[in-house]
Structures are given as C-alpha cells and as structure tokens.
Length: 113
Ligand code: 5GP
Ligand code: ZN
Image (cartoon, rainbow, N blue to C red; front, side, top):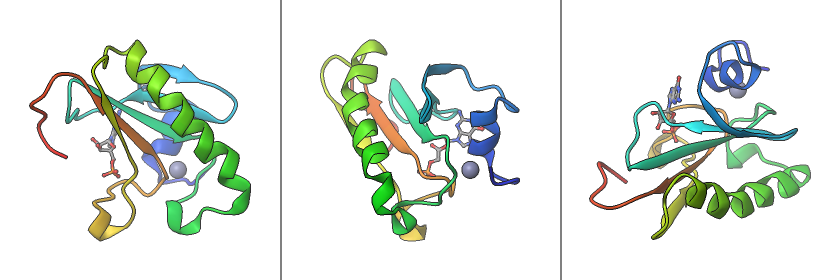
C-alpha cells in the first residue's frame, strides 16, 4: 500500500469504486472518466508503478489480466471488440502511477485513445 495512491485506496475499499470483479490478485472497476462506452480499469492489489519496474514474479499477474480482459469486456457489453492498454510514464500518458490495464470497448466513436 502506497499511502498517497488513489488506486491503493480503491483496492483497500477506502474510496468506493463500484467494483465489477475482484480476486486475490486484482480488482476491476469502471473508469471515473470513461473514454469509451465500456471503460474498465484492471488494478493489481500490489502497488508497483508501471511496466518499467515489473519483475519476473509479475509474469503470472500480467498474463492473468490479459486473459481476463476479453471476459470482462464481453460481460460489460463490449461485444464487437475492445482495446487492452497500459500507459507507462509521461510520454505514455500515465496519470496514476499504480500499474493498471485499461479495457475499452463499445460502439464507436470514442472520446479519446
Ligand atoms: P492512466 O492515464 O494513468 O493510464 O489512467 C488513469 C485512469 O484512472 C484515468 O483514465 C482516470 O480517469 C482514472 N481515474 C483516476 N482517478 C480515478 C478514481 O478515483 N476512480 C476511478 N474509477 N477512476 C479514476
Ligand atoms: Zn497504489
């Protein structure tokens, strides 16, 4: 837990988020400013900044999120395709420095991305 991290506070339940999925490794909730009709954030319970600092021991977690994305996208109504995106660092457009995976879908046009 990183004390000033908004996603750590969501993971711990300190800030409510309307979770759509959670397990022992990660939580998934709707982005507060959706860029597409379906916009989920998949957030590991463990705080680490981004892929720059990911380690070999995160391999299973990172793979798990990729494999979970299609199921959650479909369940949330993205039945005609979706994007799976991780932003890393300033030029990657990262705003929250707790690694997360965006799942975006639903009918286009989308607002951004
Ligand atoms: P990044 O730019 O770091 O890849 O994405 C961060 C995302 O987190 C943004 O799309 C932003 O809208 C979302 N976000 C930031 N704060 C909150 C929050 O308190 N609750 C939720 N649900 N989403 C948030
Ligand atoms: Zn965090």
